[in-house]
Length: 111
Image (cartoon, rainbow, N blue to C red):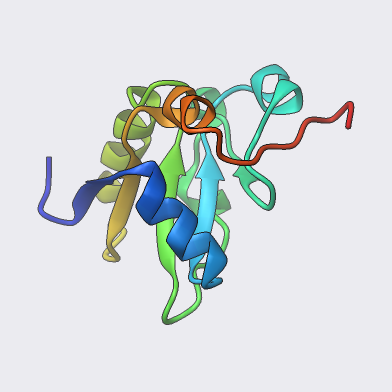
Protein backbone atom coordinates (compact mmCIF):
# COMPACT_ATOMS: atom_id res chain seq x y z
CA UNK A 1 0.00 0.00 0.00
CA UNK A 2 1.07 3.57 -0.58
CA UNK A 3 2.99 5.67 1.92
CA UNK A 4 -0.14 7.86 1.96
CA UNK A 5 -1.96 5.14 3.92
CA UNK A 6 -1.38 4.59 7.63
CA UNK A 7 -2.92 2.27 10.21
CA UNK A 8 -3.89 4.00 13.45
CA UNK A 9 -5.11 2.59 16.73
CA UNK A 10 -8.30 3.31 18.65
CA UNK A 11 -6.52 5.59 21.13
CA UNK A 12 -5.20 7.82 18.36
CA UNK A 13 -8.65 7.96 16.72
CA UNK A 14 -10.23 8.93 20.05
CA UNK A 15 -7.65 11.73 20.47
CA UNK A 16 -8.45 13.03 16.99
CA UNK A 17 -12.19 12.95 17.73
CA UNK A 18 -11.67 14.72 21.06
CA UNK A 19 -9.65 17.43 19.29
CA UNK A 20 -12.16 17.69 16.41
CA UNK A 21 -9.50 16.95 13.84
CA UNK A 22 -10.89 13.96 11.95
CA UNK A 23 -13.47 13.07 9.30
CA UNK A 24 -14.54 9.45 9.76
CA UNK A 25 -15.86 7.40 6.83
CA UNK A 26 -17.46 4.03 7.58
CA UNK A 27 -17.30 1.71 4.55
CA UNK A 28 -19.50 -1.03 6.02
CA UNK A 29 -23.00 -1.69 4.68
CA UNK A 30 -26.05 0.32 5.79
CA UNK A 31 -27.42 -2.44 8.04
CA UNK A 32 -24.08 -2.75 9.86
CA UNK A 33 -23.94 1.03 10.27
CA UNK A 34 -27.51 1.15 11.60
CA UNK A 35 -26.68 -1.49 14.21
CA UNK A 36 -23.63 0.34 15.60
CA UNK A 37 -21.37 3.16 14.44
CA UNK A 38 -19.02 5.88 15.60
CA UNK A 39 -20.93 9.10 16.25
CA UNK A 40 -20.48 11.63 13.49
CA UNK A 41 -19.13 9.12 10.98
CA UNK A 42 -20.19 9.24 7.33
CA UNK A 43 -21.55 6.09 5.71
CA UNK A 44 -20.08 5.25 2.28
CA UNK A 45 -20.43 1.47 1.78
CA UNK A 46 -17.62 -0.25 -0.10
CA UNK A 47 -20.25 -1.98 -2.28
CA UNK A 48 -21.16 1.42 -3.77
CA UNK A 49 -17.89 3.24 -3.08
CA UNK A 50 -17.27 6.27 -5.25
CA UNK A 51 -14.45 8.67 -4.44
CA UNK A 52 -16.61 11.50 -5.78
CA UNK A 53 -19.04 10.87 -2.89
CA UNK A 54 -16.36 11.25 -0.21
CA UNK A 55 -17.15 13.93 2.36
CA UNK A 56 -14.89 16.98 2.27
CA UNK A 57 -11.86 16.78 4.52
CA UNK A 58 -11.14 20.39 5.51
CA UNK A 59 -7.57 21.62 5.79
CA UNK A 60 -6.13 20.62 9.15
CA UNK A 61 -8.35 17.55 9.50
CA UNK A 62 -7.46 13.92 8.94
CA UNK A 63 -9.36 11.29 6.97
CA UNK A 64 -10.08 8.05 8.84
CA UNK A 65 -11.59 5.05 7.06
CA UNK A 66 -12.99 2.15 9.02
CA UNK A 67 -15.00 -1.01 8.53
CA UNK A 68 -15.67 -4.14 10.58
CA UNK A 69 -12.15 -5.53 10.94
CA UNK A 70 -9.93 -3.32 8.70
CA UNK A 71 -10.19 -5.31 5.44
CA UNK A 72 -12.78 -3.32 3.50
CA UNK A 73 -11.23 0.00 4.46
CA UNK A 74 -8.03 -1.23 2.80
CA UNK A 75 -9.95 -1.76 -0.44
CA UNK A 76 -11.56 1.67 -0.04
CA UNK A 77 -8.12 3.24 0.49
CA UNK A 78 -6.88 1.57 -2.72
CA UNK A 79 -9.91 2.91 -4.62
CA UNK A 80 -9.26 6.41 -3.28
CA UNK A 81 -5.63 6.24 -4.40
CA UNK A 82 -6.69 5.00 -7.86
CA UNK A 83 -9.05 7.97 -8.12
CA UNK A 84 -6.14 10.35 -7.59
CA UNK A 85 -6.81 11.21 -3.93
CA UNK A 86 -3.66 12.98 -2.76
CA UNK A 87 -4.28 13.42 0.96
CA UNK A 88 -3.23 11.18 3.81
CA UNK A 89 -5.51 8.19 4.36
CA UNK A 90 -5.75 6.70 7.83
CA UNK A 91 -7.27 3.27 8.50
CA UNK A 92 -8.58 2.16 11.89
CA UNK A 93 -6.59 -0.90 12.89
CA UNK A 94 -9.00 -3.69 13.82
CA UNK A 95 -12.03 -1.71 12.62
CA UNK A 96 -15.22 -1.37 14.65
CA UNK A 97 -14.42 -4.69 16.37
CA UNK A 98 -11.31 -3.14 17.95
CA UNK A 99 -13.30 0.01 18.71
CA UNK A 100 -15.94 -1.99 20.58
CA UNK A 101 -13.34 -4.11 22.35
CA UNK A 102 -11.68 -0.91 23.61
CA UNK A 103 -15.02 0.26 25.00
CA UNK A 104 -15.00 3.37 22.81
CA UNK A 105 -18.34 5.17 22.42
CA UNK A 106 -20.81 4.20 19.70
CA UNK A 107 -24.35 4.98 18.65
CA UNK A 108 -26.99 3.00 16.82
CA UNK A 109 -30.10 3.87 14.84
CA UNK A 110 -32.20 2.44 17.70
CA UNK A 111 -30.68 4.69 20.40
